[in-house]
Amino acid sequence: MKTYFKVAGILGLICAVAAVILAWVNSVTAPKIAEYDQSQTLMALEAVSGGFDIGEKRFDDTSDTVSYIIPLTQNGKSAGYILELNATGYGGAMKLVASYDLAGEIIAVKMLSNSETPGIGKKSEDPSYMDKFIGTGGDGEVPTSKSQLSSDQAQAVSGATVTFTGISKALDYGSDYVRKQGGR
Amino acid sequence: MANKHLHELTKGIFKENPTFIIMLGMCPTLGVTTQVVNALGMSAGVLFVLLCSNVMISLLKNVIPDSVRIPAYVVVIASFVTIVEMVMHAFVPSVYKALGVYLPLIVVNCIILGRAEAFANKNTVLDSALDAIGMSIGFTLALTLIALIREVFGAGTITLIPIGDWDGVVSIPGLRTWPVRIMTLAAGALLLMGYLKAFFGWYSEKKQKRG
Image (cartoon, rainbow over all chains, first blue to last red; front, side):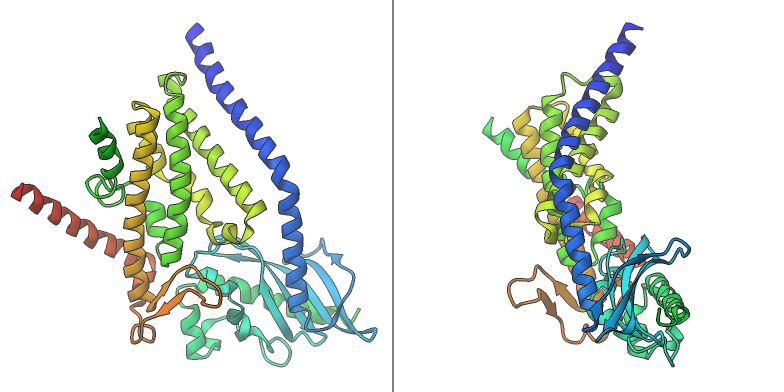
């Protein structure tokens, strides 16, 4: 019985020391990480704003796909929206920001956080990856299957179909969502 | 004595190469070798964590009771990985972004646990550190070789670290336009690993016969 307590005590001690060290490192790094993440999001919003003025962020609890919506304005008039979208890829959850005009046409898209496979699904972080979606969603449909892409574009997403489908479905949903806002 | 230290350092490079001979850490090996730069990033992470964990476990070898050594090792290794992850995220976000996916993978890399169990808990701190460095060099060479073959054939490029204006990508004419796509996929990784293992098996057998 005594040995059990001794062994458990030593293991507990190792865990406690590790926990204290980790807590200390976390207290030092957490504010820096939060600052960095915020600057990244701000940069992404600037990048997709398409030159319009960025308005006040509104969170949406009713939709699983849209986390928040930001109205875009030009000279005080409504010009479109930025949405933060939650998509599901091969490696789990992906977050992206996309801007739409009032008709639901995609202006720009940027991938934020994801756990996709490097060299395969991770390629969606390249700015050129999103080119195939820009200009769609208004009159033209958002391509949600490979057959709707040109052969070059289809080859670029082959091997990473799950990533592509996840992104395109979220963007398609966003296009409908924006149209339902009716310029508000 | 000096010879023994040298042996601990060099054995991991070829004779006991963790990937091709001991066959440890296959999961991350097959997972990340789609680009050369990924292989280098993963290797850097493994070098740091393996060195820290080998030294720490060698120091604690008389403190940790035998019956709970594995959970104790896992706590030590996971702590180092988490520290590396947090520090990188906060202070060198660009490196963190490039390595982000591999860092948590290092916890489950059995090279780390394997060396703790097979070497560090029986040997001195110096030998454990040398073993870690040697094994990491062997791991780096193996990973880079696999990644180089997979990327050249599968994508027609060699992706290295971008320096200044250069984006770090070397294109190979011909293969860039008509790549053997399967090499970048999981099946290609297993196929190549099989061929390389067969080659190294044949080579060491030949060497043994001659010796």
